[in-house]
Length: 198
Image (cartoon, rainbow, N blue to C red; front, side, top):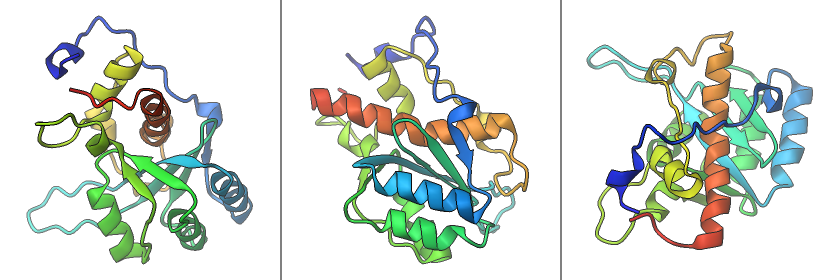
């Protein structure tokens, strides 16, 4: 299947993870629960969100949210919380848990510079899915169309919203959780085929 044939508006919509399977980590107790679940997994979905910068020369203060997901649950860590760094550091630096995402180059650098987290055992699925002779990376939308025959809807308005906000909307929670969760689902599907998207 070529990339040109994957943008069909006729594809059914990818449903994604529902709101009742998304945990916003806003207490030490929730952080401990998330830590146990995430460290018990062989692989987890991974992404970050940052409040966008609009002014020339403005430096991002992100990441403002770190998203991690198991097969059944997504965990969203607002970076403003005092307890998130030790828990995130333990998970993201774990050599035994594979962290999977799309376009993770910038995530590595901001986590290191802002939180002192050196993520390891990370797989950028966008690079893995790139076929021979292709430049750049495969995005989640293309991968969802290829593996699931569905259309991943991503709102630009939500993607560029204020992730530093103390109260995230339901749409923000769903957007962020699905960025991490869909990466893990696609990884599972890719393992079955081991074929690049060409």
